[in-house]
Image 1 (tube, protein in one colour):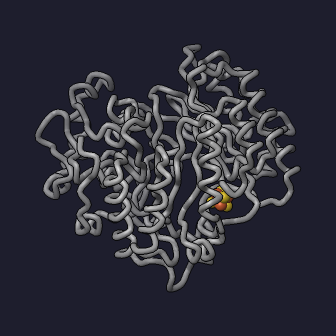
Image 2: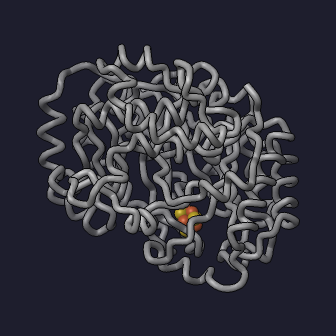
Length: 468
Ligand code: SF4
């Protein structure tokens, strides 16, 4: 398997269209409020007792200051005491839902945000000890935490290690001072390096850095320096995200408007540069923004077919239910996605009445489940075995998807897929276009507006980020 996909700028220009990121299928656009807390509760309590492995996600929304580019669900606060009240509510929610998980083996925990290390170490310990007391956390579980290096002390790292955390993801974004001033996030590189070193000395097995391209003042020259710094620091994984400018969704992004925001051609050059620089440095391109060292679990999961796609991007381990706790957190079971209330007062209000804070979601029908599996195979395995999928999904795959396969014809002409064999394969060139290749299999796109399963092209423009 080649580690670097060839980067063809003409193809990048051609296929740079609004497209879902397929962290779920159906996407969150299809969630509706008929699947509220009571409805989820009824479905969870009547399901069969088969215990699937579980991944826990806990959303910790607080941040001390707002980064202008931010698209996360966060609460800006200077009051660390807010965190204690929030942890109280989280623990109430965890107890409320604990019977759904029961003695299922917990194989992953992810603390996301916001800034998890906004919580003082003693609050992290209180939360972590509750999870350990209630759930059957496996000895070899992956316990991951998102870290803002500006908000992380040695005491935080000690607390996380005491709880068994072994993976960390650090927000870096860009090292250039002019960019950092423009995005309202001043983060000295020395701080990032110090936290990385302390994490490694404490025994964290995997460290990830997040970068963003497409921010104000970025040029290939300045971003090249950030990439060099990052390669020297040798994280195990990297995520290099395209900045999505959607101020109608995230009004703070208006601060970034003006001449300094790079145009589409500069963004493409930054993407090409990132892929080439990181793969030259020995990282494997996993897909959709993610890179990993060849010996990292993510690379191994790509090789052995156990890579999966979820709301955190790419992850390891298939056949896992995800239970999300905290405001805005999304859960995923075999036949449902459901999401908690996104506003802190509404989330807390539900729990003060001992009610589930879920407010919307979707129940997957048979067609959804067939398409979810198919799209996940494309995003994670880069191929579709008609024989295997016909057998596991109980369909005649080529007949079921005859329209979708026809729509892939022009992509085959451009060298992105090979349709003539079973399995259908995504080529090395096509690895940069996974979202475009998945779109024909999405029943909610490209339909007439009278159809229930419909997302019009106009709403797509305003709803999805661009595919490249
Ligand atoms: S630290 Fe992260 S979550 Fe908080 S405002 Fe900045 S980007 Fe958003």
